Image (cartoon, rainbow, N blue to C red; front, side, top):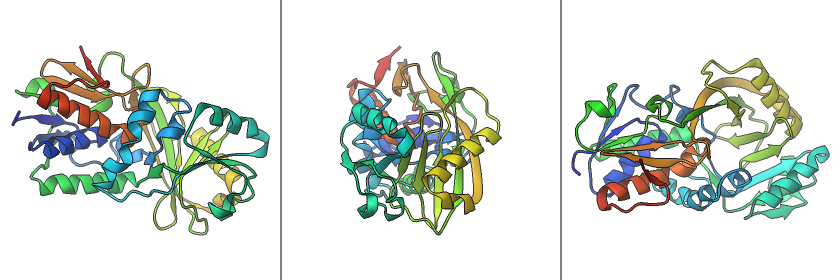
Length: 321
């Protein structure tokens, strides 16, 4: 167990390397692109640690394991514990009722002035006080730095499990080309709107164009995200930009004056049930299928993968093939 190799330096691979280091091991960490950047879907994530909100459409395992994610990330990077807010336009109030029926862990809000003064014109909302968020790019950078301080550097090499002897954790996402794995396209925008102040992620429910807005430092906001069953890796479409900006404008018309700084698109790897898993194939453990739950579920995958390697304990996310 002293020669474990982790392939892939996205959020899943980095979390696996960190979990191995916590278990007293110093894994080899390789990625064909080197350090994390715009070449991977971890770079384009929203960074919401929102297990209860995700429970509106996700399986119970996501809610259960996701509740531990904020504590994991707080050991590595800055985590903002300010909750999540879910709103809907008056004409779509039925969407808010449906969301409430499908979730738990929220408080109904009829006066938003105490939470988000600038959204006080919305008559009703759901507040999820235990949820949190982080800046994904900072989290990746902080995790890379922490691993480096423990003697774990990222090798920029294109390797597959067949090129390596000994146990392997394969966290290459879509590149792994696993049976049953599909790509779900997501598109996002980064806006600069210093005149708008939001303290926490806001989800706007809409029957056609649901939106989430995540505040970042210095007046930046991440807007996401479309969800298309597609393997298309092209840049962001004009339709996506229109939909995301239109929804943001409906939430707060001042977003019409924001500066559009960045657009991004990538494929989220997902299985049919949208539950991430550790698939064991001999000496290779595949950490994959994170779908839209990368920062929420990567810690649980990493923990269960390392427990299986070091003790043989098989968690509920571990599948032997």
